[in-house]
Image (cartoon, rainbow, N blue to C red; front, side, top):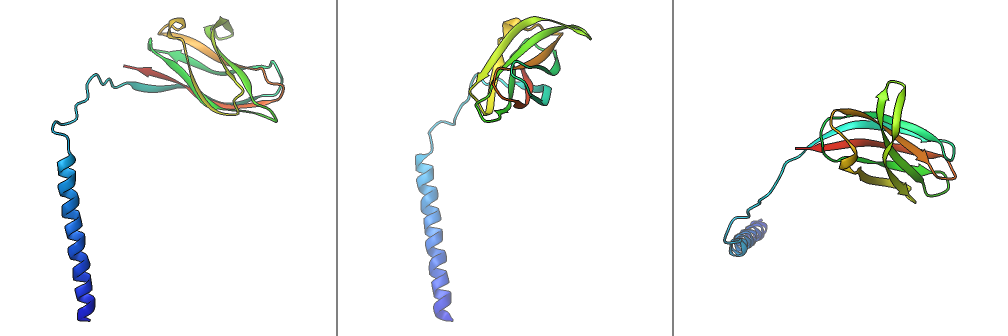
Length: 157
């Protein structure tokens, strides 16, 4: 019994010595000045659109969502796309919504080609105007049906 207690005491003493030694060497390696971070800008993030849709025909076009663009900042789309039996080729495009039944011409597009999986891209900021409503569309350029899941996100100050 005394042998077990002596063994435990010896282990405890060696653990204590290691922890003290580790603390001392960590203190020696600490930088002399505290770490300073400058030019950090916190941004807000707002999800402005979501979709879970599919396009069954080649050349088929579908509306993913309608987006109210409130800030003159970056709008990105992120998601997952998958074609059956081949790599997906999808064009994501944005148009201004004129009224409830009409959209304007394509203002910009993002081609996500040869991707079965996750992606993230952003639209050019110079094509969008704060306070306007836009329609996000997808065009299937694949020779097979595609499944599309994703969202549109705006980053702002």
